[in-house]
Image 1 (tube, rainbow, N blue to C red):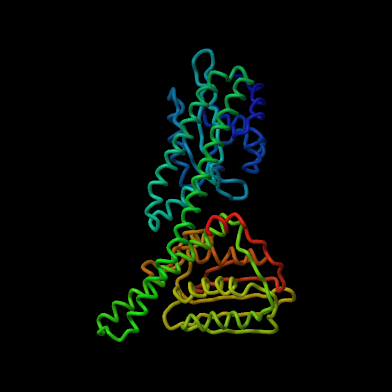
Image 2: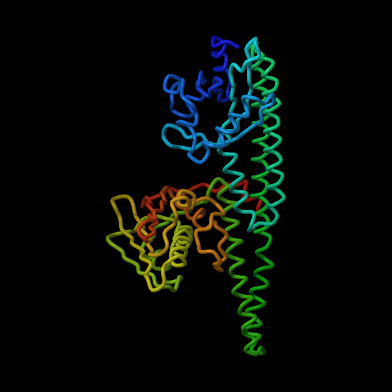
Length: 423
């Protein structure tokens, strides 16, 4: 293989890096430039572990490179690639070696596909498996699919070894491998959609028997025929049922957001001060409401109250003992702003970027609040459906969530598909 043939790699839809026997970059294609922000001139002659790897992955990658020099069938590998802007992308690699006529190693050709979104999906499934036992088996199937996709990629790479001299044949082999990988990704998305639909249907069907349990327990509690111990037991049934009801409502909201195209919004004239006051009163905890200026507008007050309750309830639960949660409401022209602040243990910088993702618990371990890790996700989706934004920050012992809402929003059209499916 000669350097003039490297231009054929531009026709490949994957990342292609060519290294010499010392690990220095000889060539990488345009996809590598677009992925990392580094041009070929900036990286030529450099080693990947000098600039493109996370610190914790430098030594493992060096060890892998050493095996590539002697192995006849290099193994596939995956690691994080750090872009010029500091972003991390998860890349699945296959490797091919070429040798000169005298048998010496000439080049190592690395072929990679960006699997960041797939890895995030698998991580999310792993995080939710503790709450949803049924998803354990599904996670295993997803892992098997990912492993088969890696095997398909390795097979495609083996075909490419014999086609390095004929650039056109090599291009066709890689295109075939990419199509197989895309088919696998579509299968993963189909499985995820089915799982979310299943959660919504189960949540919907559980509401009626749960309502029967609550009403029967309330009737027993108020009958006057129970002794103190029995009344305590019935009260626990009611409390547990209410926590279960909250979980079911969160599952239905989650399904609506993921499969129904967001939350339907029905705005009407309202006073944001009253909405916040009702939420503060319902919490029944040490919460102080501060309002400045005119905060009237048009909002879906039920949905907005749900979002505020999720955030404020989380703040109360995480607040340090003997401190007050503060809810500040003000307006800036056509935008209303709500800030919810609490004093307590900060959210770690590693967790903070993911707190609005589903099944990420922001409450303390051992909490009995009926929290599935969906509260902040649902709140974010409601605010987005209202045309606003929701952000969180945590440092210096203070955690603050800032909600920005346009004071006048148009109605959002509900999704007929989800309504039919959950009817």
